Image 1 (spheres, rainbow, N blue to C red):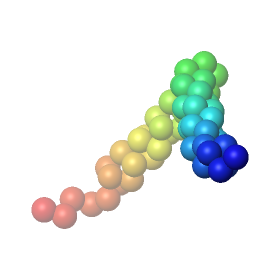
Image 2: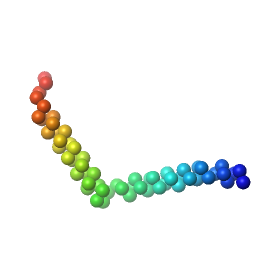
Image 3: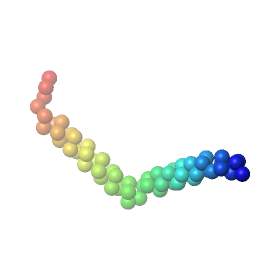
Image 4: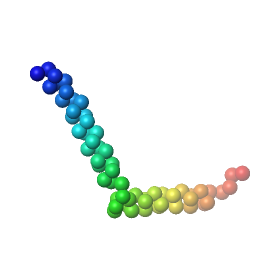
Length: 58
């Protein structure tokens, strides 16, 4: 019976790892991708505007 208790933690970790990978893969694309792309575009636009508004230091 010791072998069963020795195999449970690695099995649980393997199942958790597979669930994590499936979640990551499922979140790539679709409506989530559009929202993430919009957030990144907005952040880049803000950074570019802040860079242009800053006086030239050279």
